[in-house]
Image 1 (cartoon, one colour):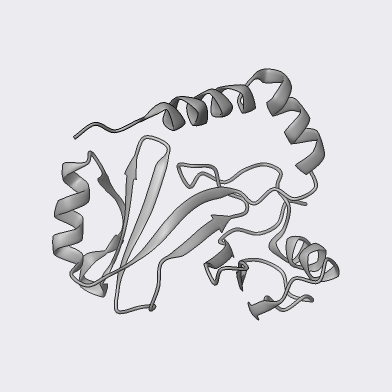
Image 2 (image 1 turned 30 degrees about the horizontal axis):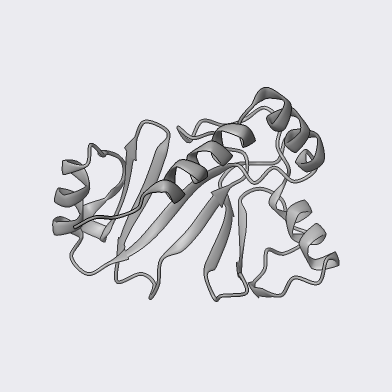
Amino acid sequence: MNRNYSHIGIMIGCLLLLNTPAAIASDTKENDTMQLGAFSISLAVQDIHASKAFYEKLGFTEAGGDIGQNWLILRNDQTTIGLFQGMFENNIMTFNPGWDAQAEELATFTDVREIQAKLKSSGVEFQSEAAPDSDGPASFVLADPDGNMILIDQHVNAPE
């Protein structure tokens, strides 16, 4: 089977260009008002034990959760995935304001309610919302134009 993989080289080249120090600095300056925090994918799985075994073969190790409650957090270096059996229907992209990739609390970050207000003022529609006058941990859910669910889930208090 002869496949043309030249498009992969083009994509890798684009990623390398986007990750140059100048590109990163430029991107950071433009986006420093909305820090979404750590990223992970939350997978809706049918059999959490089979999924755990599969992802362990890919080098993921358990980093949190409770398999007895049908949820686990797995990590491989900077990549985090959550396995959730029977908790939601579809996979969900998850951002955690206030956390780095190892779920360590950040000294400064954009509070979930500030992110929500900015998105709301941009006309984004929400599936669920954080109470705007609350403080501490909170979350909201939205969907992208293709129906992909996005959870913004803050587990820590906002920086003072």
